[in-house]
Image 1 (cartoon, rainbow, N blue to C red):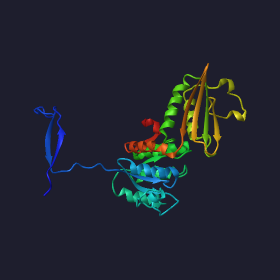
Image 2: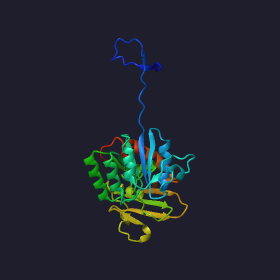
Image 3: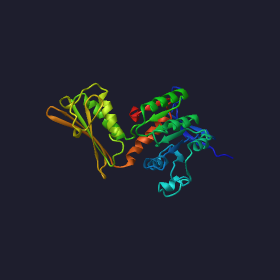
Image 4: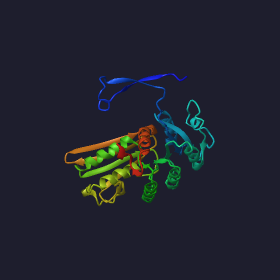
Length: 302
């Protein structure tokens, strides 16, 4: 015989006007239904950010790792690849469609994290959409044409996709602060440092420069026509210069310098570890499950 379960529930006096007490005892033989976890598939799981995402998802409330896709370490347990104490019993596979098919049978809410390559993003999101799953895309250098095509795809399928140029909450806050400052200063330059020469200027620097250009301000008028290479690269038509330092051992850093009569205003953000991206990633997963279209930029949810 099932045990009798008694729980204390608050009563809304508008619903029960005759109730004199704020609480009453409700006895039921039925258990409260448990919330189903969001099943997460990581495409690019063997990359540094993919391995960090494995750890973050397995620790996050309301989520569970359901699949790992990569072209490296195929067949190996993703938990062991991530140096976890115990294996997750989830082998790395190199076929996204096969993983999507196995997960879709559970009818649970699914999200695909895409850390792959600009050339494969559209097909990856299309496959996820076909299986009724949402996508979070963190792939640098996605072309505008691809984003437009993805937006049309998601609109037609009424499914959610978040394309995030950055997952760093600190980087987004810096960008927002830079936009506010730009209305008050006529001179601005961006200085960044990276460990290697890949993707320079960085997507972060390009995004900041584009944001500052979009507000209609003209910067550095005294130096706008200078073509000396040492003065850095001008992004956009509004005189925003970017200087990129490449030195092994330097943290990934972005600094925006503003100046006005008699003052310098500096904004700086450093990333010392890929773990800094994980709070933004978990936020992205929680938000994308409610979307029915494509959203560009994690800042829309801050």
